[in-house]
Length: 323
Image 1 (cartoon, rainbow, N blue to C red):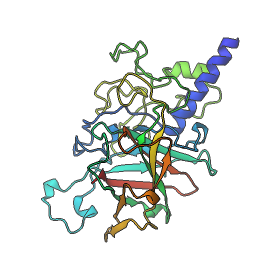
Image 2 (spheres, rainbow, N blue to C red):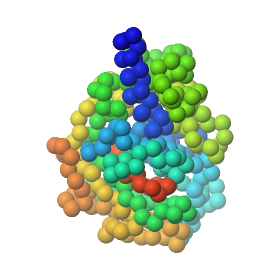
Image 3 (spheres, rainbow, N blue to C red):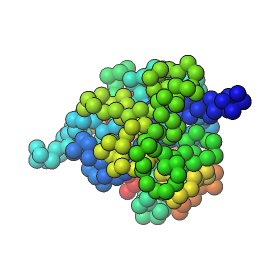
């Protein structure tokens, strides 16, 4: 009986992660859906994962958020109205961050949601001066103000802070076997039903199933169970080891930049279509907060996260780079 109780506690801790953050997609820079998505874009859906908790935030205070590239591409001329571009080339890879579709599960000063990715190609910022963004906030849902954060540096891969590497590759042989596509909780739906009490989703207690049968419905697009056929997966197991070094990084040493699209001295341009260009000097000390022993010469991860309030937020990012 005691063993069963322990199993239930473990499963519920994973349930918090899988339900409230909607899924986990292993790093993959070769997306094929939708077909316009740039294979090399750092804004491709498959390049991002659920975020580990930023400084001052807890796993228990996370809320559900989707991230996706819309099936219908955003036009370059919508983002940059003065652009001249051929009709066949008039499309841009845009990453949507969206928690406008869900009930807010936790609402207090500690509530948050976010995603992160590795920065394989970026070893230091020595050749860069600015963090450059082009973004738009969906004001049709009543949002007149939103602030979010971008963290750059060494960031823990431990999304549920249990100190243990979670991976679908249970025998660690590097092969994604047919019985391993169970999500990061390593439980099938039937197993979830046996150990999770009073689930929010009775047929999928962990809320981690993947589905994308309707091009315009993204509710389950970040799921990890049953996502072997996701064209951005390339038949890879889901894992917390997003940099692929075979271990779980637990260190936190990064720079946190506060992004305020509506009230920032770093706003350069607001287009007639509502797209905002923000350029933040990377080395300007007033622009960032230092977490841990951060160094501009030791960068391996980038995280986007935002506090959650009563507003329903949809942020569209067309450019996120260093220049």
